[in-house]
Image (tube, rainbow, N blue to C red; front, side, top):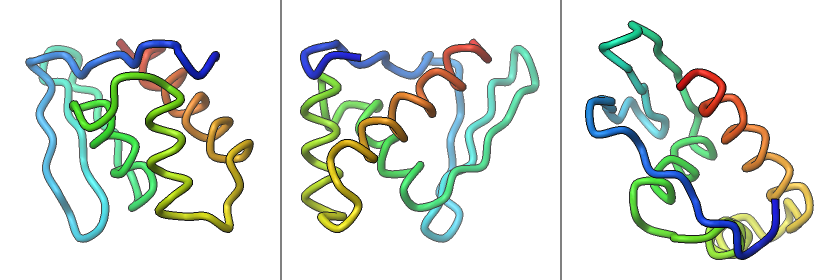
Length: 88
């Protein structure tokens, strides 16, 4: 995914709730849910409007976790996006 790739936005029907540092996401229509840890929650926050492109989200996360490395963060973001998109 290129840095200028626009991020998908969560479907308005999807419900999320903070649980500690993480987030639980529920799609009531399909009854599918995801539990995300702190990093996943930060990615979710980016999808919910804090970032508008893949590059902006990766940069934001890299500033928060500089030891992780930009390439690893980009791969992790892409993997979570693929999993969420595959689930609708």
